[in-house]
Length: 69
Image (cartoon, rainbow, N blue to C red):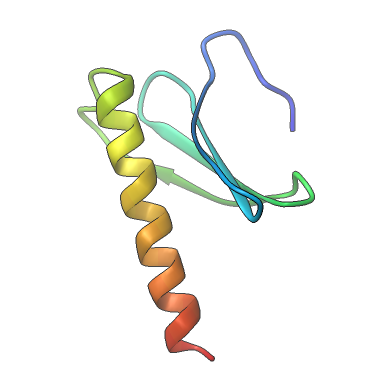
């Protein structure tokens, strides 16, 4: 995982990290720092918005993982 100027970590736990590029793109990494997904949200104006969208993504990811067990 190579962070660039302006990148912000909007979520991190033992399993996942989400990096926001300060614009519309979010990169999702697993515990081994391997990128596992990329998603885009238009209209993210600040880090609070980005944190909210990152948390929403993680909540949905955990729900999907629980459903697939």
